[in-house]
Length: 274
Image (cartoon, rainbow, N blue to C red; front, side):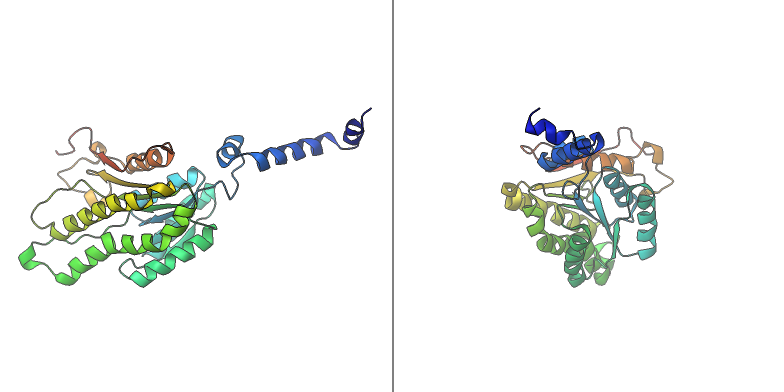
């Protein structure tokens, strides 16, 4: 008997299998580890969901947890954040929770570091936050307009500026912002302007980071069946569902390294108007 064979006869079969399995895990790439069922900390996406308490944000966060991501939830309402965290934690591990006022740029910068510390890194950033102030320009309350601009645009810029280094360094970075289909109408001045600013910034951001392999995508849904779109004029079952937006996020994250869906527009298949 060879020396190799002699060595094996003293090792119980179950221990040999475990050693073989561990070796496969060590040698496999991250994608192969996921296929083999080994969701290591290294293989998991580290995903930050901003605006995680909303109708879209909460569904996106739950989907990302189901896909195996490590999650940190960002929002201003701790009670609502905890409710979303409990839903996720029931079957997918407790996510991190950070209560942040997105109108406070210093707090935005700080929360990036806290989220990365909670997850052991950061590679995926999903922005679902939004504030609204409907007013025609002659009657508009300027502090309310400032708040819309801060939450819908400036917070994104400050968060990305602080988070872009680890996102780029990951080699699989992704920045996804949930916007809306641009539609100018009376009273929508600052809402419309902030969304246009976000889209323009993301277009330039892609050029800044594409060579790192970082994806940048804007998703523009029409009417989505959330409390924000509730109206007696609209049928919620004919609207886009939050899960449809989550599917679009998944599409971006699963897209090939050779392609980036930089802009996705989603419209209701049938008119939701009564």
